[in-house]
Length: 304
Image 1 (cartoon, rainbow, N blue to C red):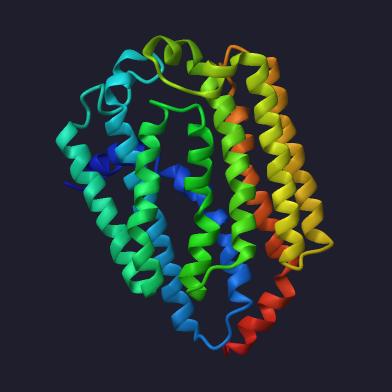
Image 2 (cartoon, rainbow, N blue to C red):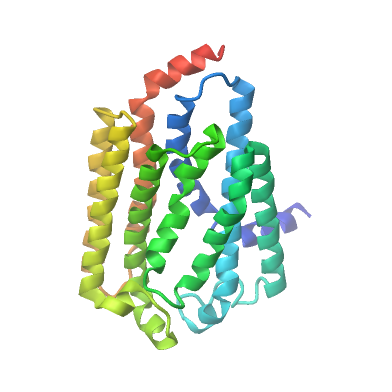
């Protein structure tokens, strides 16, 4: 019985690449720390519940988005040798089961946003719409990479709203920085499907601009990412330690670009994906260390 449940959980976890949700958490963690230090008056229990429901929202939103993307692309995935073994094309998960999973994940997202605050709940539907419609942008525009980057990059802004129930320029800058980072990575990722996408009439930067121009567009996107992240750090009052980690982030992005340049066929080694996953962790670590003393003082004021 237990093994069967674990098998089912593992199957759906692989279906939406649940492990990648963990790499998205630092995006939200950046805004959580900055908002925490600007939001006095909450008790430890209230902060704990805020953190819990933000985590619920992240899991629900990302699972719904990834599940829907897998369902929407099932026809293309079945034709592409690289993706033919994914759960739906391989018959491991049915179309109906995939849709049910997406609906349940979306419900989880709405429930979490309801318990956060009214603004988060009102913005839940347009946020989910943005996340789900990415699946169709590749059918008509090469800007799909930037649409994806913005969708996932909303994590800092969404977390800020969840904690402070307001819009602010600071999380917008973090969102833009992360969005351009993700877009630059996704352009490189799309190199491996360039020939397939062209045959199937799908749109991407590699299909529209070719290999060499795509590499330069990805580099420009990463430069813009670093600029917005630096601006966000300045507006957030960060100095010293954070900038060491900001330079480390630039080094990691340069590593992505170097690997892409050396593997122009789009067949990237595992290190390529590993480097990308560390970028958000490094940024979060920089902010955590920079603000460690303020965090400790704030925690002590909560009576711990």
